[in-house]
Length: 108
Image 1: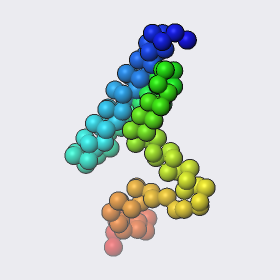
Image 2 (image 1 turned 45 degrees about the vertical axis):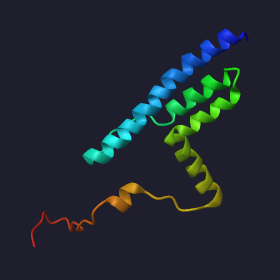
Image 3 (image 1 turned 30 degrees about the vertical axis):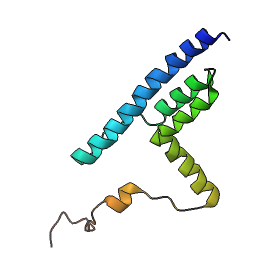
Image 4 (image 1 turned 135 degrees about the vertical axis):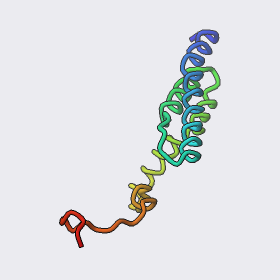
């Protein structure tokens, strides 16, 4: 593949991928600030950046895909499954304890 075409293909994938990574980190920051879940686009940005730089003449730049925290989440999940480690479930650990409902509609 010619160099100029290779860099154009790289830009076609890597620029939107980098924007997805930025949006994901922005959503993560907004979620922490506002105290509610705001979804970003984890993994998508990393995949696009990785594909883009694998099409470029400088293939080692595909390591920039590791800037996406979704890629690390997938890798961590795979390692936990291979090593049989317990994974942290944020919904169970961060949820406040609740009283068990006995089914009588709230009467004592």
